[in-house]
Amino acid sequence: MPADISIIITAKDRLWSLPKAVESGRSSSLKMQIIVVDDNSKDGTWDWLQQQRDLTSIKGEGWGQAWAINKAMPLATGKYLRFLDSDDWLNPGASELQFEIAERERADVTVSGADAYHDDVLIKRVPWVLTDDFIAQQLGESDGSHYSSFLFRREFITDLPHRCNFPAYDFAARLDRCFILEVALRHPKISECPTPALCHRHHGKGRLQFRGGVRGVGTNIQHLLIYRQILNLLDQRGELTERRKKAAVKILWPLAHWIAYSHLDEACEVADWVFKLAPDFKVPEQGLLGLLYLHCGFRRTEQILALRRSLFKHFHRTPS
Image 1 (cartoon, rainbow, N blue to C red):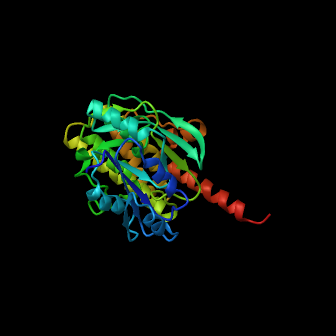
Image 2 (cartoon, rainbow, N blue to C red; image 1 turned 30 degrees about the horizontal axis):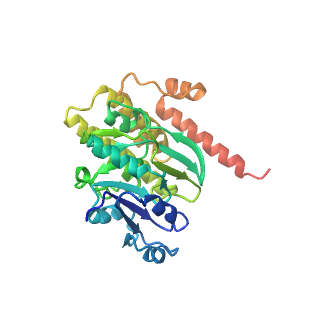
Image 3 (cartoon, rainbow, N blue to C red; image 1 turned 135 degrees about the vertical axis):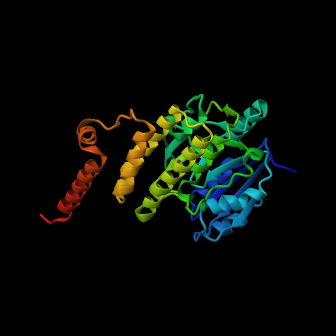
């Protein structure tokens, strides 16, 4: 018998948090299908999963989160579908409430806000921001919540994969951003859940989709490539409105700064693109930094910032 909701949980060395994520997905009133993909954990996760008789478990080989989700998708039977990271969990009653709203309003996507936690301590409640342009919102106009807060009608997204190798680029580190933007491009019927569904955990143990070092550089480049693809598609469809351009540059401008840490020429190209998209763009930085961007330009300012970082490291490494 098909489930009411399928939840796909991805896990890699997260036995310390996975049980809480799994338990939050269970329900006494809905038929839930919980699919957990263990992406080659080394901490006993697979052994624990074999003891959970109500779960569908998949053993991965370490190919990453996007591969894991795509592997699980054909097994999902739920009328609705949710993606959940093993670091996070759902608020009590969230699935039941979103299911009720989705059924009543025949929604393609039932959205909600999220609660932000530091480990297990609530630090901030982030409500859903009402909008009349879901695409602009997800491009960066306002807080777009977290896609694990959303309940998707499965038939609406069955043919939409999580991108891991798309036009020869690896989008895996920003798979959620790419996915939700592609969902937005389909103009879904949106319904709102009034209370946050997701508990999103912040901690110091690293998340599957966020990496430092050279992988952090890759994440920035992937983010840029996603925006180039999405804005190009919108432009081809005649849907790249001024509002959506202004929403996108709110993400692209800080992204240019982070890319400049390692690839200044490419970062300057992004900064130039920002001003082409929004000729009246005003740099958001205040004080001296804002004046530097205004009077010295993006390249020279980033060179000054790089010199400052270099001097700071030098003086902090030199014995007194």
